[in-house]
Image 1: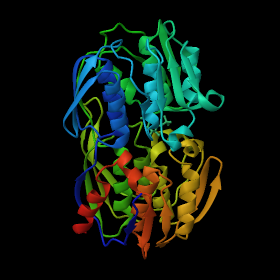
Image 2 (image 1 turned 45 degrees about the vertical axis):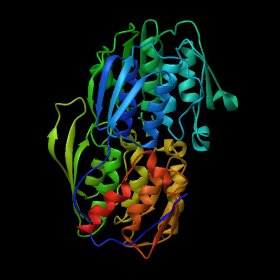
Image 3 (image 1 turned 90 degrees about the vertical axis):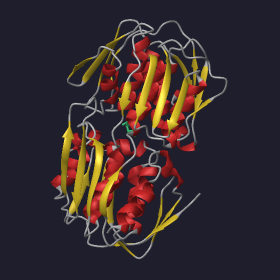
Image 4 (image 1 turned 30 degrees about the horizontal axis):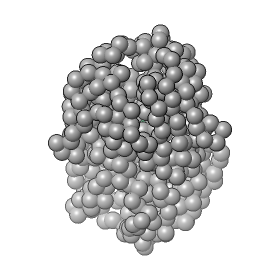
Length: 434
Ligand code: S3P
């Protein structure tokens, strides 16, 4: 387990590109695999999580080649062409792989077993198992049927379902919609608030008719060859760009352009919040004609003000709270986050892990069951911060270290490879021009 020491930066300057979007990469591999014909993927994120999805589908007989790490050629097997895996499907730390693949495995005519690392084994799966069972799936899980590993057994055809989800979760919505491709009749999912809509957009691109009415999404069961292979261009990951957006704002003497980032409005809550906090961030060169809209993000050092987040914005920035905490720690005044209980069940309990590190850096933090309150201050103290094996927590401390007095040591940074290979090289390229 590697660690790193970060020192104060004089400024960050330059133009960068962040790796491809993690959510869209997973979906491109899954839909490409169950489509008929060839799918070409450009801008794939070759991080460990997405590679788990590739390997899972290879285990089920899909031929996927990678002419280079960001490019995939997927020889789709059609909706019902997957083969029984010889071994356990191991998805490591990847919650998206496990929850979305559950929707596909639920209707296969073979048994399968899916497992993950210690962190994933402690993450709740009841949220996908409950609706899948309602559709007729035979899924068995540990600890009251709610935790991995998950065992799938063949059943009669799934039936469509009209499911109202208690949480705004794209993983839950997507697992049900994927199972819905195989089910008899209509499958409808209604969420309490809109979560990221990459699955819906990609279903349309692959030729699956889908109806979206406000917070409800419906599809009908499909024939074997309903999905047709596509060319998919994956934009830069907004969640990866978020670390550099905050870095550009809080490190004095900085000016950064992040090129070709996905700006789907179901993902960009952080951008609006940072602008409300006084951050000088602009979207330039917007292209809204693509399946997923993109833009270049321009950021310049700014004085930030504390902000009370409206709970409605939470699902649109669910992965960005660790890095928002760093912006809040350096803003003038208080930042209050509520309605974010889901942070407790991410790769770590992110309320707990962020409060722990912020306190070590000398910041006053109050924790709530569903959020936290952070008192901003002018300086952070360098400290020994723990990632708790969580990539986004680790990267957040790396950004905080750029403005802290003294050294910031981050233990266990290997987890960053799950979503952001090359993170430190990119950061160094901006420092060298600062
Ligand atoms: C994801 C959805 C979100 C997000 C995760 C990726 C997806 O999870 O936190 O990193 O790709 O659908 P939830 O659906 O649990 O909110």
